[in-house]
Image (cartoon, rainbow, N blue to C red; front, side, top):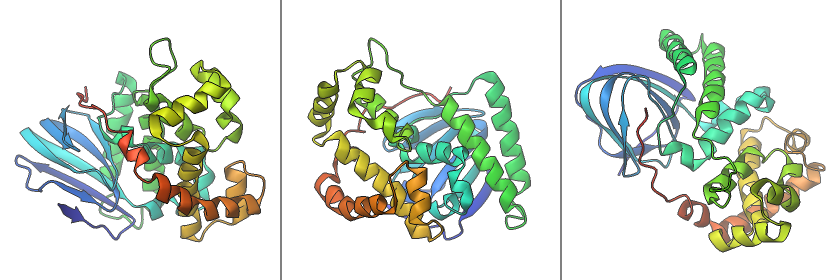
Length: 286
């Protein structure tokens, strides 16, 4: 398996090809791929997804992919690293949370996004702006970041949201989506609140999660939140007080305790999340 490595925090690539020359590969960064025009198939983690004009795909570092081109295709790549996401105080902006939720949720990497007509027009224009700035990345760094946040809003509100209803309340993907979106709001992660949302009793909510994942909801929340907190600490840009405030935690000592526990939880349950995101996500982009 070939692995492409990117050392710059952000790169923009804009090219048109009739034949795909890259082998099946993954990378050490995130990619938002926009199909300006063209037709073919995008193979992501062995799933074949039909693409055409205006499609957008989001890939994470562990995703394996390549393209099968049927009609000459104009690709636009926006590639960025974790360091780019955590570049400054803007991490507390809700737009960054939209982006972070998207890139940390594995289900969003396995299909194309479906846009309504108005948002598709906006997406097209945003990528035109991104293309216009590719030759002067340093000079346009702040402007590119604004486009990234705009895309984060647009992508999240157009993702195939899984809502609670009579037929899908027991869908584990819905539970994961809920946990990821509410990770900053501890009051929404209480068993009573979650049970009401998914139409479960307080006790059965925990039993259902444990039965389907092999771990408790508390352990999963600690692991997921710990990943996000670790990334902030690793940047060296945020104090424990700032992190505690962002995640609704009591104080700095609470953050420290979570970090101390996280390695034990990861070791015990490191295969659980990957296993329970394995399901058929073969879809058309539009």
